[in-house]
Image (cartoon, rainbow, N blue to C red):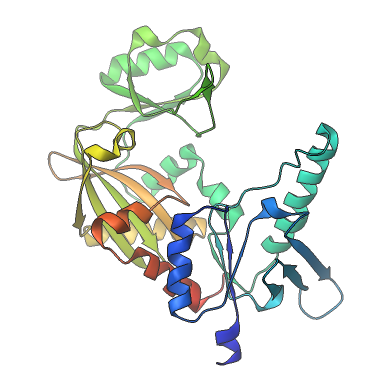
Length: 321
């Protein structure tokens, strides 16, 4: 095995992550060394030591887990999947906030400084691409068909938009954990009428969007330069509400659309992303949104598409930033 082949891939994710397991299995088949860690293990099973300004390399050091000691400068790729940051519940509130910030900015900052490894995806670039208003603007700029959308906390603006457009839906700008009477709830895309708009809209910006007269949805996963497109038929406005109602068909995107989605990821410096599109009765595609770190494991299970293998190929190459 050459030195290049001995360089490990770092996988940062939570303890139970079936999707990451799929990718790691593929990397193991290629005999690629893998280091798996979770920032939540700091103080127990995770240690970092990094040096700056003392050698020709910008950063040197090690990350240590119970089973691995890894030279940071030798990483070929980082798969930033679904890591969990520590909360230090055994500490008092002030100490816990302080310790959590030191981990995020110390450990996170050390990893973010690694410019010789391929990131899938770099967390700061994920964050930049995760703002829906920015997504809509870039999609429009690139020539994708974007449903008319209003972001506002002005009730009169919202009522006027709904009155003008007729069928309008409300979508959250960002998912957050939410409970009512101790029961977790999720903000689905839902129809909204002028009668439902009141002064509570003033509290925060809301996203209102003209409803697309769709016949199906399409989830597109891009990995490197590979494009996987799956048509999802459900009859639901938001197909995530009932996975048992879904049927799947592998489809080929129009060449121009596929190239545009690659350009979209290039704009944000992303190696991968999951796009949601809608198909109308004329067969035209409408932009809905991008999830820079979207789920895809169930799609491989349902369709047989070699998505995990595509991630393993990309991480094995470690093409750099």
